[in-house]
Image (tube, rainbow, N blue to C red; front, side, top):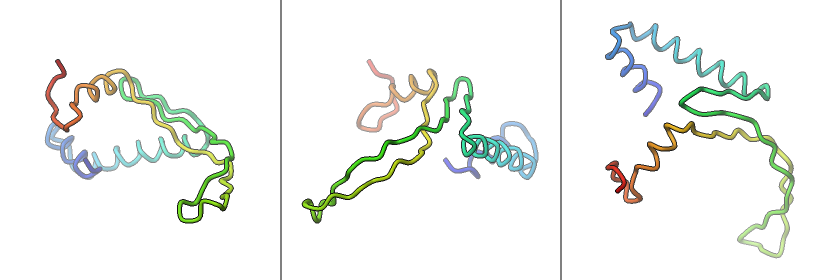
Length: 103
């Protein structure tokens, strides 16, 4: 699903104008991105939590030259932890991609 798909679905279900819905969706995403970029945790109930984690520095290996060590510096990354409802819905998807209920 793309941002446009989301906007169109909301427009069709609510009858709101496409441009108005687009602006709300875009501002929501902008505010989430801004908060995460400032190191804040963003918690959306029944959806999930976005947070910044710091990965420690480590030594990696180049598969083409395994004898050479490649230093990987410490860096910040965004982590997403799905909410309970999303996690349970995803667990119902079978490994072969079928969206039927697990038995």
